[in-house]
Amino acid sequence: GENVEQHPSTLSVQEGDSAVIKCTYSDSASNYFPWYKQELGKRPQLIIDIRSNVGEKKDQRIAVTLNKTAKHFSLHITETQPEDSAVYFCAASTGAGGYQKVTFGTGTKLQVIP
Amino acid sequence: NAGVTQTPKFQVLKTGQSMTLQCAQDMNHNSMYWYRQDPGMGLRLIYYSASEGTTDKGEVPNGYNVSRLNKREFSLRLESAAPSQTSVYFCASRAPEPPGELFFGEGSRLTVL
Image (cartoon, rainbow over the protein chains, first blue to last red):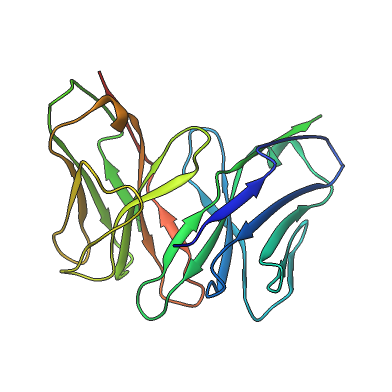
């Protein structure tokens, strides 16, 4: 089955700096790569996603890049703010039709220091 | 529009006791999931249901059973709880593609003594 590895497990940055989180996946059939943010004590929520036919996607301060050949994708957060502090999960999705299995990475705890 | 609702939010069990976690979604999604979250291990899939009447095992199904009662409801049952099942459990439903976003419930924190 799919295996998703995520690094680093913890990341501390100064407010205003950039943060980068990297993930690799094993199944070349994966075609959808979402990123979820989980604030302390809350549920994970989607912040950005990318499909396998796209190399990069941006949404304000957040961007995701995908390298299908190398099977890795990354989350970039620019101009970090204290409210960006949370655990971030990458995921990879395979399958077709009404169901796609979603496999998550182990998470990155991001701390933005004011 | 409540999204995904889970009950209970907290539960303490003794080893060997049984319980059912309830989950309901009001978004008319076909696919529903149960994940467990443990420190340093991310979200691991326990069971999923692609549609009403179907269920299948995920990565860590041992010790659990599920029921897809109807399109809205997907319950998770622990028949004989063990301390290793102490975790936070999340139910989720998935929007039709695109984009295929997962919507999570608030989570259920279970402690097995």
